[in-house]
Image (cartoon, rainbow, N blue to C red; front, side):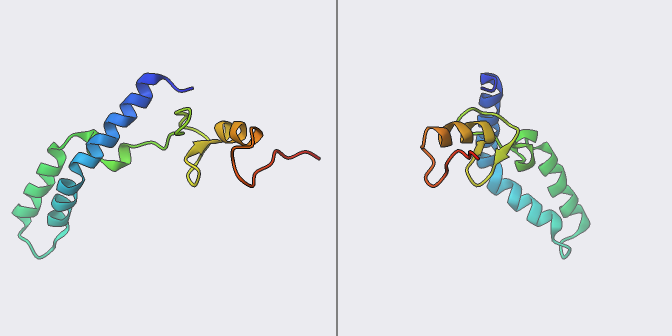
Length: 101
């Protein structure tokens, strides 16, 4: 199990990303538009830089929904390998059987 503080920090980041998503997209569009004057694009970049760092989607980590573990994460299942194995052993993942040979 991951530290509770790290899981809570991740949730806080997710909320910030969601809150500022539209504003970030709008400012990025202005900054990337070559038809606008250079000053206007530069101002958009400065406004983008003033937004909270944690509002950037690149600051998010993939974490297991069950344990909060950041490593060995399966995107399709949204859980770590350890949690997946536990669920599979208990028979809670349809079509998955613990291998034995």
